[in-house]
Length: 111
Length: 114
Image (cartoon, rainbow over all chains, first blue to last red):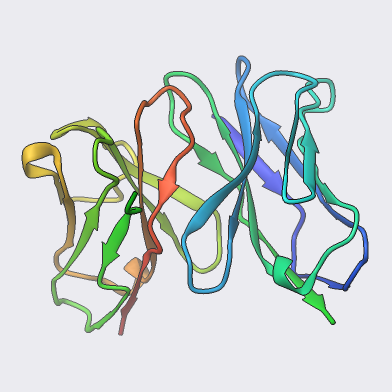
């Protein structure tokens, strides 16, 4: 079946550091890929998405590129802020099936 | 527009008791999903409603879990009787379409079974 693997956390960075959270997937066909973020005390929010190979999703300074050849969708941000502290979930959707989520990666950004 | 709302936000019950979780989706969203995250692991699919019909309930763990969506509006998820392993965060999500439209999540209900 379809699956998503994320790097294990927690990830602790200093403010203004560069962030990468790795995500790889296994799926049949051509899924759409998503990053969701959960801030403390809140539900999951869509951060960005990409629907086909080589698409780049971007939002709030975060970027991720759909790499079919490496089945990856790594999340990056050039300069993190304390307000980016949250849990990040990589997810995929394949037509006719349901969303599949990774285990989440907790990010803590220190001032 | 109002988002997806879930009630209660927290619930602590004893093993063997019954708990009912409620989800109000975004108005006009026919698709409603229940997910669960146990022990900080991945968010797992439980079931999917399209309006009042169960489209897919393959993720329901056992017959102690019962989900309903009478009238195609809000949904309830009942756990009866609750077991220790049912502890976790239960998320509800809704979407306009089921073909990969982004899901809109509620804040979740944290269930603790003691």
